[in-house]
Image 1 (cartoon, rainbow, N blue to C red):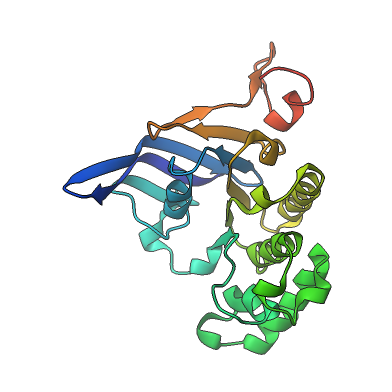
Image 2 (image 1 turned 60 degrees about the horizontal axis):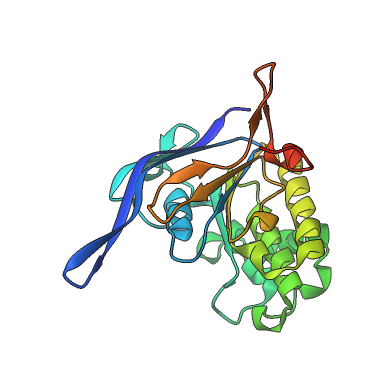
Length: 242
């Protein structure tokens, strides 16, 4: 696997009153092609901020972000990075339109995009949701629709913010298996950076990283074997201690 996303020495803060509140400090992280990396942390600890920087939605105060060796400032095609969260489109549009938007920038090619959206919804098992609105969907259907939008059109990087946190354990496992299958079927192979509020929502990831209240990252997964290999979290979590 080759490096896909590189975040280097990121700093980010926000003004509060007359002061400044640091959120991220000296954060560096990589995501490889075909890899799922999960950021675990509580509310207001900076994981969504980190994901927005990785997705090019917010700039860092300091540090660099690159995708496949190019800075985000140099990326001409925003469709290479896909953002998914629990909030959906924020507009009462048909699900098929929402899923197909990344393929129809500026409304061009909308008909073809909706056809592709229908195929993708069928792929994830949400074929009955195309004509509905986001507000009409159950939590499980929103996860399926979000994954359909995230992986339509062969993006390089899919950024998933807390999407699986709304599910119980059986459904989380099912959604995790689906996400993994979408990564493995992607061509070229994409990478996933996701956030989760607890370990149960992240145990299928290749690497799990905690974001602390001090705005730094701590590796929580991966076990170095005697042969020098690192066992992925999803393997060593089956009974071995990381």
